[in-house]
Length: 415
Image 1 (spheres, rainbow, N blue to C red):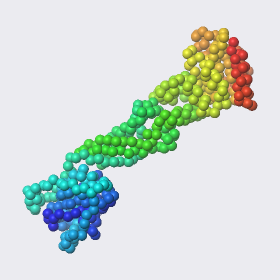
Image 2: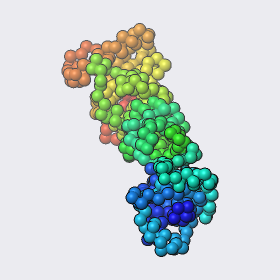
Image 3: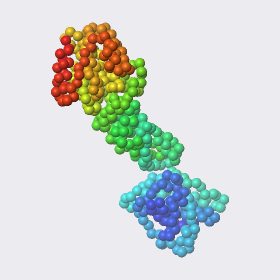
Image 4: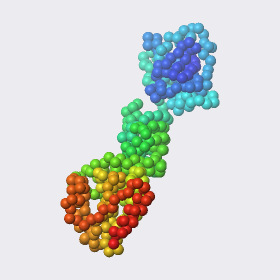
């Protein structure tokens, strides 16, 4: 059958030399990437047999045309059918990968002719001392599609995109992939585990299209449904989850520090997180905490937040229990007000002169008092202290009436 042309039917993961002679596609020497193709719809190659190796049950062939669509396999003599039944391996001398990929896709019937090799070539193949050549893959870009997952912990957040490394095993090469999303900023790297919590997944699904040319691989398209989900609503939910965990379960890292400013609230957690990328101000941060916490003192904290002299002093956050120290202006004096988020504690008020130096001295003393109360308890401080301070008790029987009563009493003390 040397120089005889036959059809090789390709369907799913099989190749048919005859109606009853089936080969697995892996028995075709066409390279690992092409062997992965699955022909959902029938296609066929017209091949010319160039050499036969009986002991290896192998033939070398060249492709004369690539065809999308089925073909007849019953128009062979019994002698040729018996010959083909003995074949277990097919080596290809030439493959146009673009044409091969074209017929593997479903669509209308097409035929793509191959370039002919010429008579000198055939004469060479009939020379006994020549050995069969290895497959020659033309230098034509190949498009491949991959679907895989990447753990959230291996994703890097950047301004406008996420990136991660992925290994293409066939070429043993790592490639950095980038998925763009205008809502993402690099500061999210410090809280990316919260994105995983909100999206309810530890991995992202990735679909990518690559182009392979010789030994190089280039990503042409890449996307992930999880990354695409990240929008302003998801980011707000991440902020809420982050703040909830911080206010409920966070412990003070620096035992010598009592209160934290807006910036320190985050930097104590990680030096990479810039608070202004999450919240515009300390007051906005507190307002967010109040809204998500179902605070017992929701109305009181909201009132104090609006009255806080943010131009004079940064709002101070205290942990265990979560609470804040506000600076409120009176007619003649300024007042430091300590209010907890949701523990049933009274509101503590300390009076101070309005001068900057006195304010600083008074606040440093208040920090020392709060630290003493946290270590030894309020009762000891109330029994032993000589400080001039005032308290307002909360009435929890009716939230609205209790707040109005608290507000009147506070305003009466602001002289």
